Image 1: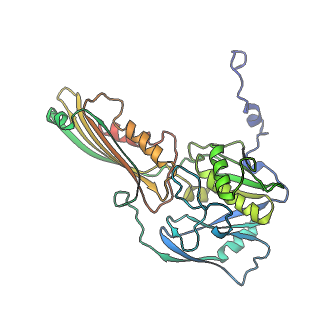
Image 2: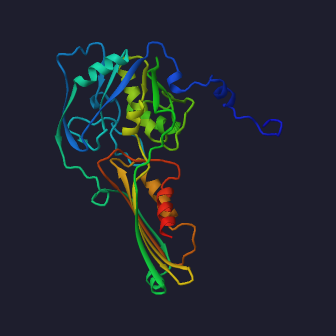
Image 3: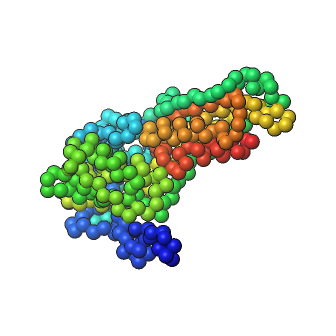
Length: 354
């Protein structure tokens, strides 16, 4: 019917309708092993040591730590502050922080051995309140007019505080990546992702590859909504490091509870409004403060915060406006892209306030 009306069919439509489309977990690479991430359970601590249970047989698996990274131990991003794996002596900054990686020929071996990897740590005091944090990822101030004059002309001044929490993208397909080492020393990754060139840049930096050696293939992607913009770079690096060490393809397909616990979410925010209104309903002054919770690392927080700041006054004419916005670090998993990029949080506050 669409073609009869002059509209082209979606290119991927027939394959998805017939079940022929291959999502990451559908791809088959003979001899592939399975990978898993060993994570912190503490929100903040110093990593003292990684110990393997001497009573367990580690000869049939591979374990990767920060010491195995051939390039830079940093995830390529706007501000490169996030390690691929926390090194010995480094600081753990959230409860799901990747510390080590494990790969085995089958999932049962992973389930059996992962409990034999012990993280020795020294606890540090965590920060969970974004307003109590002294680490600012980004801050902006925009405005126009004369705020004091605007409030002086108001018949009513209304103040309000609005808070929004984390929100999960909940794509149908979990984060998934398969790394395949090449004979030329290169590495290919196949995954569910939104931004292939983010992943490509990250692979070059961390694995020490050339542009030609790093190959990124976006498989059919079962939803993203921003949740597969920056995060797949981490998963690709983890799978690739395991593949590099064991010399064979490695599959890393997140289970839902891991995806929920470890990946980026919409930024929680505190938004305060002080608004001056005339008796006829005309807005004469808006003073708005935004504090966003960036989580442990920067990711795309500066972009999210800027868009939130620019949308926070709503679609209303007001001659006197001041908007102050900042995003800070807390000891929680990093927050990142989610459809609307900061605007839904502030628009909720604006509409509720008005």
